[in-house]
Length: 195
Image (spheres, rainbow, N blue to C red):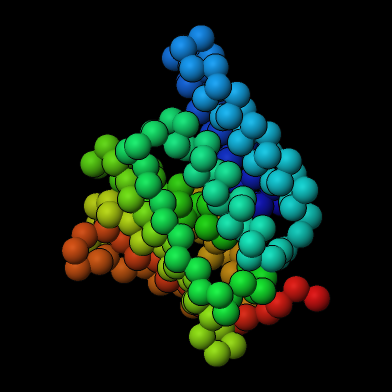
């Protein structure tokens, strides 16, 4: 039920972004861009609605879902937003929790835009032995001194609780400020290939 609420929150945010962009004259000034944004939005909605009853899916599906979300956000922030993917071929056949990366990317965008008016994030996925190692790094302000994951927002809590539910005592979730600025979220959980 909590994940359905999270999906609803994502849908609400995306609808708000679309409304802002369309009312800023995007349809009149850049109809091709408006059409592209609506296509990304439709693809994202369809995928979120089709996966809401699943716990995990192939990592390539997770990457496509995250890319659709990023494309929608690029419609709002344009060149101010850059997200890079670095995916180990050995991780290609993995399964991953549904909407694992989207809340983390959303978090990076939110804090990056708030503090710097730009955001550069990187998603890294590696298979090391029988574990999947995932990192989401950004160039935002990092975590405030003395702040703990329990004090973070809904998105991070959703990811942490989903990992605990799927991989009890077999996963790791850590947040750490990077030396050169920004935040690194690292997640490790057992590697599984689709059945």
